[in-house]
Length: 233
Image (cartoon, rainbow, N blue to C red):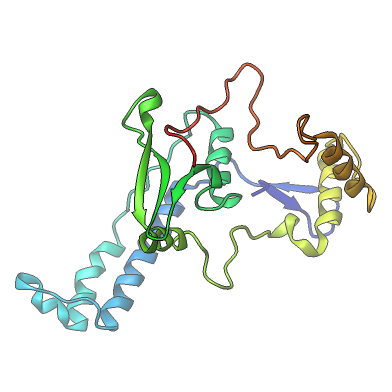
């Protein structure tokens, strides 16, 4: 969400009002409508059943009367600024948008019947946080597939300024209107491939001469992630 957009005539930048990103009252009313609409659809499809004192709600008009007061009261949506700032939020979201359900480094052992992998117990402290779990192969695959999007769904969709059709044009115009300096020019076609090949050739193993693969990067002064307990097979 860029917090604004280019005017229809392309002459200036139109900024959003302060607080546009998370309007709590709008979120509350949107959530209220979605929940009540889903309840109504489930009732009409026969997926809701009443028991005891709620048995009369099986009738459509009685159920509608029961929901009517809920459409008039304000619902509560709790939202506040993140303690660690927006960078922490982006780091959290990136783990779900740019990674698979489980990385290869967490796989410890496997056989025809089970899979052993590491997991984090956030109630524990220090090295005790890293623990091992062994699941049956079928259960491991079932949990893994819960993180696979259905066909036709995308993790990230780009709209507005970032839409694929005119992305380069609109972003260039937005930077001009906002007087944002471009630190580096976009590489020419084919130049990126040359840089990538050069980096690959430069990162070779001193022992065998094979290409080295970066598995983790960390900021200066920050120690790398502790290895998982146990020995790898």
